[in-house]
Image (cartoon, rainbow, N blue to C red; front, top):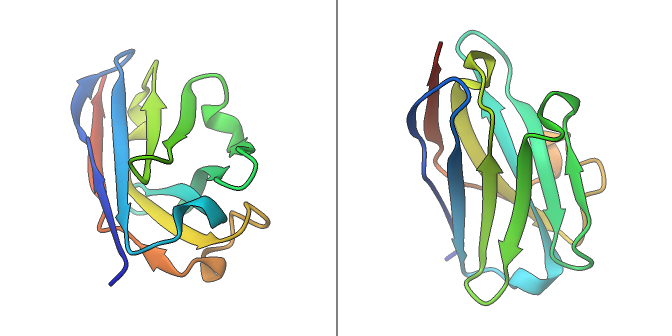
Length: 125
C-alpha cells in the first residue's frame, strides 16, 4: 500500500521558519517526483515545489523562490520542504503528492498518483 504522510506544519510568526516532511512508503522512491502543493482558505490548490528523485532537479513557484528549499533523503524515502521567511500569505494546508519519473508539468494535479493528507501551516503577522 502506498502512503504519503505529510507533517511539520504549525503556527509561526511572520519571518519564521518551518520544515515540512513527506514520508513515503510503498513507492519505488528512486524513480519518482514529489511535489508540495498548498491550498489557502477560499483559494484553489497550487503547486509550490517539485523534486525529481531521478536527477535531483527542483522547481519552485515564483512566490517561494529564494525562501523555500525542497530536498530529499532517498535512504529515508522522505522529501522535505524548508520554509524560511514565512509570510502570512503562505498560510495554507500543504500537501505532498507523487508522480512517476520527473517533474514534468508538476503544476498539473491530474498527473499525480498519490497524495498525502495535508498539514496546516499558519503564519501570523
